Image (cartoon, rainbow, N blue to C red; front, side, top):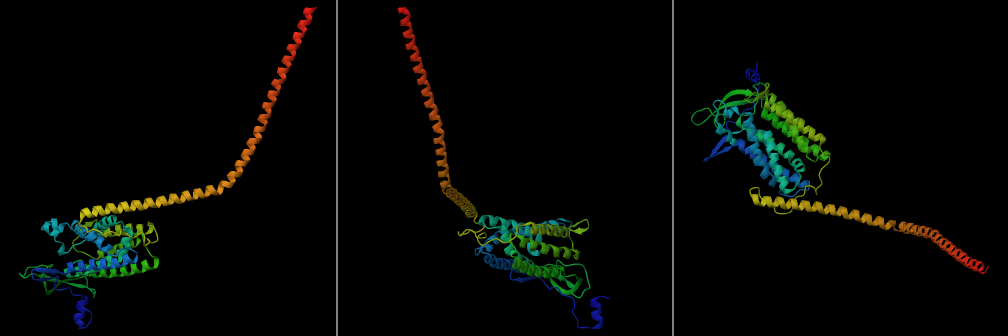
Length: 402
Protein backbone atom coordinates (compact mmCIF):
# COMPACT_ATOMS: atom_id res chain seq x y z
CA UNK A 1 0.00 0.00 0.00
CA UNK A 2 1.38 3.39 -0.95
CA UNK A 3 1.77 6.26 1.47
CA UNK A 4 -1.10 8.21 -0.21
CA UNK A 5 -3.41 5.18 -0.11
CA UNK A 6 -2.57 4.65 3.54
CA UNK A 7 -3.33 8.29 4.34
CA UNK A 8 -6.62 8.15 2.42
CA UNK A 9 -7.74 4.92 4.07
CA UNK A 10 -7.01 6.04 7.62
CA UNK A 11 -8.12 9.63 7.19
CA UNK A 12 -5.03 10.71 9.12
CA UNK A 13 -4.19 14.40 8.91
CA UNK A 14 -0.53 13.90 8.09
CA UNK A 15 1.92 15.40 5.61
CA UNK A 16 0.91 14.71 2.01
CA UNK A 17 3.10 14.81 -1.08
CA UNK A 18 4.81 18.04 -2.09
CA UNK A 19 2.71 19.82 -4.74
CA UNK A 20 4.31 21.42 -7.78
CA UNK A 21 3.51 25.03 -8.66
CA UNK A 22 0.45 25.28 -10.93
CA UNK A 23 2.44 27.32 -13.43
CA UNK A 24 5.92 28.62 -14.09
CA UNK A 25 5.12 31.54 -16.40
CA UNK A 26 3.01 34.65 -15.81
CA UNK A 27 2.04 36.95 -18.64
CA UNK A 28 2.51 40.62 -17.75
CA UNK A 29 1.12 42.42 -20.75
CA UNK A 30 3.07 41.24 -23.80
CA UNK A 31 5.99 40.04 -21.66
CA UNK A 32 6.13 36.58 -20.06
CA UNK A 33 7.65 36.52 -16.57
CA UNK A 34 9.37 33.15 -16.19
CA UNK A 35 10.13 31.84 -12.72
CA UNK A 36 13.14 29.90 -14.04
CA UNK A 37 14.78 33.01 -15.50
CA UNK A 38 13.91 35.03 -12.40
CA UNK A 39 15.60 32.46 -10.12
CA UNK A 40 18.72 32.46 -12.30
CA UNK A 41 18.91 36.26 -12.20
CA UNK A 42 18.40 36.40 -8.44
CA UNK A 43 21.13 33.79 -7.98
CA UNK A 44 23.57 35.78 -10.11
CA UNK A 45 22.82 39.00 -8.22
CA UNK A 46 23.31 37.29 -4.85
CA UNK A 47 26.58 35.70 -6.00
CA UNK A 48 27.96 39.05 -7.21
CA UNK A 49 26.85 40.94 -4.09
CA UNK A 50 28.27 38.36 -1.68
CA UNK A 51 31.39 37.82 -3.75
CA UNK A 52 32.01 41.59 -3.72
CA UNK A 53 31.88 41.65 0.08
CA UNK A 54 34.23 38.69 0.40
CA UNK A 55 36.64 40.15 -2.17
CA UNK A 56 36.91 43.44 -0.30
CA UNK A 57 37.46 41.57 2.96
CA UNK A 58 40.50 39.97 1.31
CA UNK A 59 41.87 43.37 0.32
CA UNK A 60 40.52 43.70 -3.23
CA UNK A 61 39.10 46.87 -4.75
CA UNK A 62 35.39 47.66 -4.71
CA UNK A 63 33.52 46.89 -7.91
CA UNK A 64 36.02 44.32 -9.14
CA UNK A 65 33.67 41.34 -8.83
CA UNK A 66 31.04 43.11 -10.91
CA UNK A 67 33.63 43.96 -13.55
CA UNK A 68 34.77 40.35 -13.79
CA UNK A 69 31.17 39.12 -13.78
CA UNK A 70 30.56 41.18 -16.92
CA UNK A 71 32.86 38.71 -18.64
CA UNK A 72 32.11 35.53 -16.68
CA UNK A 73 28.28 35.56 -16.69
CA UNK A 74 27.74 35.67 -20.49
CA UNK A 75 30.43 33.03 -20.95
CA UNK A 76 28.82 30.92 -18.24
CA UNK A 77 25.33 31.11 -19.74
CA UNK A 78 26.64 30.11 -23.15
CA UNK A 79 28.72 27.30 -21.69
CA UNK A 80 25.82 26.00 -19.62
CA UNK A 81 23.51 25.94 -22.63
CA UNK A 82 26.12 24.28 -24.87
CA UNK A 83 26.67 21.52 -22.32
CA UNK A 84 22.92 20.92 -21.96
CA UNK A 85 22.36 20.77 -25.70
CA UNK A 86 25.40 18.53 -26.23
CA UNK A 87 24.35 16.01 -23.56
CA UNK A 88 20.62 16.10 -24.46
CA UNK A 89 21.03 16.59 -28.18
CA UNK A 90 18.20 14.20 -29.09
CA UNK A 91 15.67 16.70 -27.68
CA UNK A 92 16.70 19.21 -30.32
CA UNK A 93 18.23 17.26 -33.19
CA UNK A 94 16.62 13.85 -32.77
CA UNK A 95 13.36 12.55 -34.19
CA UNK A 96 10.65 15.16 -33.69
CA UNK A 97 13.12 17.69 -32.31
CA UNK A 98 13.33 21.35 -33.26
CA UNK A 99 16.95 22.61 -33.64
CA UNK A 100 15.96 26.25 -33.08
CA UNK A 101 14.71 25.32 -29.61
CA UNK A 102 18.36 24.92 -28.64
CA UNK A 103 18.54 28.72 -28.58
CA UNK A 104 15.54 29.11 -26.24
CA UNK A 105 17.47 29.27 -23.01
CA UNK A 106 14.49 30.75 -21.17
CA UNK A 107 12.69 27.39 -21.43
CA UNK A 108 15.21 25.79 -19.08
CA UNK A 109 18.25 23.62 -19.60
CA UNK A 110 21.63 24.81 -18.29
CA UNK A 111 24.44 22.38 -17.58
CA UNK A 112 26.40 23.55 -14.55
CA UNK A 113 29.60 21.90 -15.80
CA UNK A 114 29.61 23.95 -18.98
CA UNK A 115 28.64 27.07 -17.07
CA UNK A 116 31.55 26.72 -14.64
CA UNK A 117 34.01 25.86 -17.43
CA UNK A 118 33.24 28.73 -19.81
CA UNK A 119 32.42 31.07 -16.93
CA UNK A 120 35.92 30.35 -15.65
CA UNK A 121 37.34 31.22 -19.07
CA UNK A 122 35.53 34.56 -18.98
CA UNK A 123 36.80 35.24 -15.46
CA UNK A 124 40.34 34.32 -16.55
CA UNK A 125 40.20 36.84 -19.39
CA UNK A 126 38.98 39.57 -17.04
CA UNK A 127 41.59 38.77 -14.39
CA UNK A 128 44.32 38.91 -17.03
CA UNK A 129 43.15 42.35 -18.12
CA UNK A 130 42.71 43.72 -14.61
CA UNK A 131 45.91 42.07 -13.32
CA UNK A 132 44.39 40.22 -10.36
CA UNK A 133 45.05 36.57 -9.37
CA UNK A 134 42.31 34.27 -10.65
CA UNK A 135 42.74 31.65 -7.85
CA UNK A 136 42.16 34.26 -5.13
CA UNK A 137 39.17 35.61 -7.02
CA UNK A 138 37.70 32.10 -7.28
CA UNK A 139 38.07 31.58 -3.54
CA UNK A 140 36.19 34.80 -2.86
CA UNK A 141 33.20 33.94 -5.02
CA UNK A 142 32.98 30.18 -4.39
CA UNK A 143 30.34 30.24 -1.59
CA UNK A 144 28.23 32.73 -3.55
CA UNK A 145 28.25 30.54 -6.66
CA UNK A 146 27.06 27.51 -4.70
CA UNK A 147 24.31 29.61 -3.09
CA UNK A 148 23.30 30.85 -6.54
CA UNK A 149 23.00 27.24 -7.70
CA UNK A 150 20.70 26.49 -4.75
CA UNK A 151 18.48 29.43 -5.72
CA UNK A 152 18.51 28.32 -9.35
CA UNK A 153 17.12 24.92 -8.35
CA UNK A 154 13.88 26.65 -7.41
CA UNK A 155 13.57 27.45 -11.11
CA UNK A 156 13.61 23.71 -11.84
CA UNK A 157 10.80 23.32 -9.33
CA UNK A 158 8.63 25.83 -11.19
CA UNK A 159 9.49 24.22 -14.52
CA UNK A 160 8.71 20.72 -13.18
CA UNK A 161 12.11 19.44 -14.27
CA UNK A 162 15.18 17.82 -12.70
CA UNK A 163 13.08 15.32 -10.80
CA UNK A 164 13.73 11.66 -10.11
CA UNK A 165 12.02 8.31 -10.42
CA UNK A 166 8.47 7.60 -9.27
CA UNK A 167 8.17 7.10 -5.53
CA UNK A 168 5.68 6.86 -2.68
CA UNK A 169 7.84 8.46 0.05
CA UNK A 170 6.03 11.13 2.11
CA UNK A 171 8.10 13.90 0.56
CA UNK A 172 7.40 12.80 -3.01
CA UNK A 173 6.81 15.58 -5.57
CA UNK A 174 3.56 15.75 -7.52
CA UNK A 175 3.95 16.48 -11.24
CA UNK A 176 0.87 18.09 -12.81
CA UNK A 177 -0.33 18.09 -16.36
CA UNK A 178 -0.30 21.63 -17.79
CA UNK A 179 -2.27 22.96 -20.73
CA UNK A 180 -2.19 26.17 -22.73
CA UNK A 181 -5.17 28.45 -23.48
CA UNK A 182 -6.12 26.28 -26.46
CA UNK A 183 -6.31 23.14 -24.36
CA UNK A 184 -3.07 21.76 -25.76
CA UNK A 185 -0.66 19.99 -23.45
CA UNK A 186 2.21 22.38 -22.58
CA UNK A 187 4.16 21.22 -19.55
CA UNK A 188 6.54 24.17 -19.70
CA UNK A 189 4.33 27.17 -20.38
CA UNK A 190 0.85 25.91 -19.58
CA UNK A 191 -1.31 26.02 -16.46
CA UNK A 192 -2.12 23.04 -14.27
CA UNK A 193 -5.65 21.63 -14.05
CA UNK A 194 -4.79 19.89 -10.79
CA UNK A 195 -4.45 16.51 -12.46
CA UNK A 196 -1.46 14.63 -11.02
CA UNK A 197 0.52 12.82 -13.69
CA UNK A 198 2.95 11.09 -11.28
CA UNK A 199 4.71 11.38 -7.92
CA UNK A 200 8.51 11.48 -8.15
CA UNK A 201 11.67 11.94 -6.12
CA UNK A 202 12.21 15.70 -5.61
CA UNK A 203 15.85 15.59 -6.68
CA UNK A 204 15.84 19.35 -7.20
CA UNK A 205 15.15 19.65 -3.46
CA UNK A 206 17.89 17.19 -2.55
CA UNK A 207 20.41 19.14 -4.57
CA UNK A 208 19.25 22.48 -3.19
CA UNK A 209 19.63 21.27 0.41
CA UNK A 210 23.03 19.76 -0.38
CA UNK A 211 24.19 23.05 -1.90
CA UNK A 212 23.11 24.99 1.20
CA UNK A 213 25.01 22.55 3.42
CA UNK A 214 28.00 23.00 1.11
CA UNK A 215 27.85 26.78 1.52
CA UNK A 216 27.95 26.38 5.31
CA UNK A 217 30.90 23.98 5.04
CA UNK A 218 32.85 26.35 2.80
CA UNK A 219 32.35 29.27 5.16
CA UNK A 220 33.43 27.24 8.19
CA UNK A 221 36.54 25.78 6.54
CA UNK A 222 37.57 29.13 5.04
CA UNK A 223 37.30 30.87 8.40
CA UNK A 224 39.09 28.15 10.32
CA UNK A 225 41.94 27.40 7.90
CA UNK A 226 42.16 30.62 5.81
CA UNK A 227 42.17 28.69 2.55
CA UNK A 228 43.67 30.39 -0.52
CA UNK A 229 45.31 29.92 -3.93
CA UNK A 230 42.13 28.53 -5.49
CA UNK A 231 41.79 25.66 -3.04
CA UNK A 232 38.45 26.88 -1.65
CA UNK A 233 37.06 27.04 -5.19
CA UNK A 234 38.31 23.50 -5.79
CA UNK A 235 36.59 22.43 -2.59
CA UNK A 236 33.34 23.98 -3.81
CA UNK A 237 33.61 22.02 -7.06
CA UNK A 238 34.32 18.81 -5.14
CA UNK A 239 31.38 19.28 -2.76
CA UNK A 240 28.94 19.97 -5.55
CA UNK A 241 30.22 17.10 -7.72
CA UNK A 242 29.95 14.62 -4.85
CA UNK A 243 26.31 15.48 -4.19
CA UNK A 244 25.39 15.68 -7.87
CA UNK A 245 26.74 12.16 -8.47
CA UNK A 246 24.18 10.65 -6.09
CA UNK A 247 21.36 12.90 -7.29
CA UNK A 248 21.93 11.62 -10.82
CA UNK A 249 21.44 8.04 -9.60
CA UNK A 250 17.85 8.93 -8.63
CA UNK A 251 16.87 10.47 -11.97
CA UNK A 252 15.25 8.64 -14.88
CA UNK A 253 14.38 11.48 -17.26
CA UNK A 254 15.79 11.52 -20.77
CA UNK A 255 19.58 11.82 -20.85
CA UNK A 256 22.59 10.57 -22.76
CA UNK A 257 23.99 7.33 -21.32
CA UNK A 258 27.43 5.72 -21.59
CA UNK A 259 27.54 2.00 -20.77
CA UNK A 260 24.11 2.37 -19.18
CA UNK A 261 25.23 5.22 -16.90
CA UNK A 262 24.07 8.82 -17.24
CA UNK A 263 26.75 11.06 -18.71
CA UNK A 264 26.39 13.50 -15.82
CA UNK A 265 27.45 10.74 -13.44
CA UNK A 266 30.69 10.31 -15.38
CA UNK A 267 31.23 14.06 -15.43
CA UNK A 268 30.61 14.35 -11.68
CA UNK A 269 33.13 11.63 -10.88
CA UNK A 270 35.85 13.03 -13.15
CA UNK A 271 35.41 16.62 -11.99
CA UNK A 272 35.37 15.50 -8.34
CA UNK A 273 38.70 13.67 -8.76
CA UNK A 274 40.32 16.67 -10.48
CA UNK A 275 39.07 19.09 -7.81
CA UNK A 276 40.39 16.94 -4.96
CA UNK A 277 43.75 16.61 -6.71
CA UNK A 278 44.05 20.38 -7.02
CA UNK A 279 42.99 20.92 -3.41
CA UNK A 280 45.71 18.55 -2.18
CA UNK A 281 48.53 19.67 -4.49
CA UNK A 282 47.97 23.45 -4.73
CA UNK A 283 49.97 25.97 -2.71
CA UNK A 284 48.81 26.28 0.87
CA UNK A 285 48.03 29.53 2.70
CA UNK A 286 46.24 32.62 1.43
CA UNK A 287 47.19 35.57 -0.76
CA UNK A 288 48.02 38.84 0.97
CA UNK A 289 46.01 42.02 0.48
CA UNK A 290 48.83 43.44 -1.67
CA UNK A 291 48.67 40.45 -4.02
CA UNK A 292 44.98 40.93 -4.81
CA UNK A 293 45.23 44.65 -5.51
CA UNK A 294 44.55 45.75 -9.08
CA UNK A 295 45.36 48.96 -10.91
CA UNK A 296 43.79 52.14 -9.53
CA UNK A 297 43.00 53.38 -13.04
CA UNK A 298 39.42 53.61 -14.29
CA UNK A 299 38.55 50.14 -15.58
CA UNK A 300 36.79 49.99 -18.97
CA UNK A 301 33.60 48.02 -19.59
CA UNK A 302 33.79 44.66 -21.42
CA UNK A 303 32.28 46.09 -24.62
CA UNK A 304 34.91 48.87 -24.84
CA UNK A 305 37.33 46.64 -26.71
CA UNK A 306 39.90 49.28 -27.67
CA UNK A 307 40.02 50.62 -24.11
CA UNK A 308 40.31 47.08 -22.76
CA UNK A 309 43.34 46.42 -24.96
CA UNK A 310 44.95 49.69 -23.91
CA UNK A 311 44.16 49.01 -20.25
CA UNK A 312 45.59 45.50 -20.45
CA UNK A 313 48.76 46.74 -22.14
CA UNK A 314 49.20 49.52 -19.57
CA UNK A 315 48.65 47.08 -16.72
CA UNK A 316 51.19 44.68 -18.17
CA UNK A 317 53.73 47.50 -18.61
CA UNK A 318 53.16 48.63 -15.04
CA UNK A 319 53.64 45.11 -13.76
CA UNK A 320 56.83 44.71 -15.78
CA UNK A 321 58.18 48.02 -14.49
CA UNK A 322 57.35 47.03 -10.94
CA UNK A 323 59.18 43.74 -11.36
CA UNK A 324 62.13 45.60 -12.87
CA UNK A 325 62.25 48.03 -9.97
CA UNK A 326 62.16 45.13 -7.56
CA UNK A 327 65.01 43.46 -9.42
CA UNK A 328 67.06 46.69 -9.41
CA UNK A 329 66.41 47.04 -5.71
CA UNK A 330 67.72 43.55 -5.15
CA UNK A 331 70.80 44.37 -7.26
CA UNK A 332 71.41 47.60 -5.35
CA UNK A 333 71.17 45.73 -2.08
CA UNK A 334 73.65 43.22 -3.41
CA UNK A 335 76.06 46.01 -4.46
CA UNK A 336 75.77 47.63 -1.04
CA UNK A 337 76.69 44.37 0.57
CA UNK A 338 79.69 44.03 -1.76
CA UNK A 339 80.89 47.53 -0.92
CA UNK A 340 80.47 46.84 2.75
CA UNK A 341 82.43 43.65 2.47
CA UNK A 342 85.19 45.46 0.57
CA UNK A 343 85.46 48.15 3.21
CA UNK A 344 85.57 45.58 5.94
CA UNK A 345 88.40 43.78 4.20
CA UNK A 346 90.57 46.88 3.64
CA UNK A 347 92.64 46.58 6.87
CA UNK A 348 93.44 42.98 6.09
CA UNK A 349 94.45 43.96 2.56
CA UNK A 350 96.68 46.75 3.94
CA UNK A 351 98.40 44.38 6.30
CA UNK A 352 98.86 41.82 3.59
CA UNK A 353 100.17 44.57 1.31
CA UNK A 354 102.82 45.60 3.84
CA UNK A 355 103.84 42.01 4.24
CA UNK A 356 104.17 41.68 0.50
CA UNK A 357 106.23 44.86 0.30
CA UNK A 358 108.54 43.65 3.01
CA UNK A 359 108.87 40.39 1.24
CA UNK A 360 109.68 42.14 -2.01
CA UNK A 361 112.25 44.34 -0.25
CA UNK A 362 113.93 41.31 1.24
CA UNK A 363 113.93 39.62 -2.13
CA UNK A 364 115.55 42.71 -3.67
CA UNK A 365 118.48 42.62 -1.27
CA UNK A 366 119.95 39.33 -2.43
CA UNK A 367 119.64 40.37 -6.04
CA UNK A 368 121.55 43.59 -5.36
CA UNK A 369 124.43 41.78 -3.53
CA UNK A 370 124.78 39.36 -6.39
CA UNK A 371 125.15 42.22 -8.81
CA UNK A 372 127.82 43.81 -6.55
CA UNK A 373 129.78 40.57 -6.38
CA UNK A 374 129.61 40.32 -10.13
CA UNK A 375 130.97 43.84 -10.51
CA UNK A 376 133.76 43.13 -8.03
CA UNK A 377 134.69 39.94 -9.85
CA UNK A 378 134.92 41.80 -13.15
CA UNK A 379 137.12 44.44 -11.48
CA UNK A 380 139.49 41.80 -10.15
CA UNK A 381 139.74 40.16 -13.54
CA UNK A 382 140.52 43.50 -15.14
CA UNK A 383 143.27 44.25 -12.63
CA UNK A 384 144.78 40.79 -13.20
CA UNK A 385 144.81 41.29 -16.94
CA UNK A 386 146.56 44.66 -16.56
CA UNK A 387 149.20 43.13 -14.27
CA UNK A 388 149.95 40.42 -16.78
CA UNK A 389 150.32 42.96 -19.55
CA UNK A 390 152.83 45.02 -17.52
CA UNK A 391 154.83 41.92 -16.70
CA UNK A 392 154.96 40.90 -20.33
CA UNK A 393 156.19 44.30 -21.29
CA UNK A 394 158.89 44.20 -18.72
CA UNK A 395 160.01 40.73 -19.77
CA UNK A 396 160.16 41.74 -23.36
CA UNK A 397 162.57 44.62 -22.59
CA UNK A 398 164.92 42.46 -20.61
CA UNK A 399 165.18 39.86 -23.42
CA UNK A 400 166.02 42.48 -25.93
CA UNK A 401 168.71 43.89 -23.82
CA UNK A 402 170.31 40.48 -23.32
